Length: 462
Image 1 (spheres, rainbow, N blue to C red):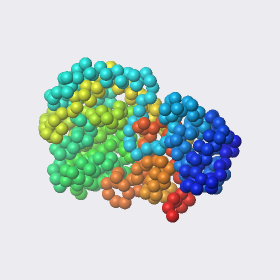
Image 2: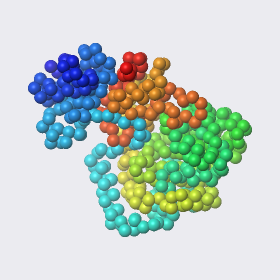
Image 3: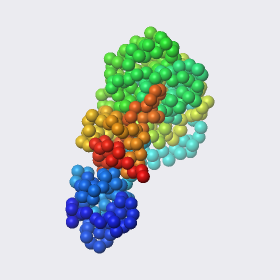
Image 4: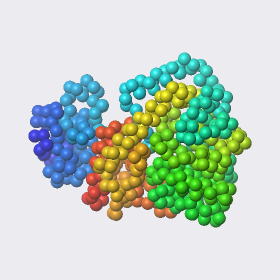
């Protein structure tokens, strides 16, 4: 039977994708499909049954969820040994729904690294009573020493008087925005940008003015024109592996933006979320123009979002005071437990080991993207873990996202990233989080097939 499996779906009286799962279960029960049997590819089965690719993909997803089959990267889809599945819990090799929506780094799965991370966490229990108390604002001397070491690894060499330890990048950005601008003031940002800055600006009553971009990021001439027209108080930039477009500003372009900012006395707010992921990034704004840059280095994209910690460097010790006051009023303090864990990981080398894993795993996942998606449809960075897909003619972002949902895949349309104007027909895919390479491969196969065809062929509405 193997690759020639062609079930009769009519006998089940169910939607085709459910009928595929039912037929698989029945043929496994009656011995027509034995453990280890290689099934036809989704494309081959779709052609044999005269179905669209997405329907067959949904059927395979349903069968994976039931523990009937498993995907093996580079090999195909195989019938699972029910005995092995029962003993193992059946979850390790299943490829169920794939969530491409949350922009998280790949989660370490190497046993030695997991054990090392767990051991650090367990060791904190020896000081649990102290960690459950209120702490002095801004972190202990040991915490600041670790933060300075982390920042120096990015090339940001500062002092403790300019450094603040914050409970996440959002709180740092919120406090900085509240100090550099007042309600009604203008902030510039990339036309397609991180959605969080839109929410923060709206909450603070700030006017967000978009700057046009190309594949290299913000246009410095457009920034200069905006400075003469709207007199912004600051420019917000996510200049490295930008979320969502993946663009990275070159040193030359950074220097051009700095020249404009200095000419018009505009502060630079640098959200360097992916700083440690790139092995050789361009110098940061904080390195090139420390006297006008508020530098935010969150650890969410490097170590894990649940850590909720960020290191903020202000232009001067004097400018740190009002920002510290705003942070203290809004947050009281960064979590002592999160801060202590990050400090331990940075000082004992665990953080660098996690970063190295994220780099290597992200590169491996980007190679999967390159092997499956048409090169002309997307932009990405080999060190990043998200992808920006520009949809072919005929596709809308809403239709593509709906098509993904019908196959158990989550993607994010361009709408939340767009500061002004009509959002482009584009979507963001994230390759990290709990998803495995196997799941990434499965999901990208489905999306690649959709990109090759007409949206009319994938319609599921009647």
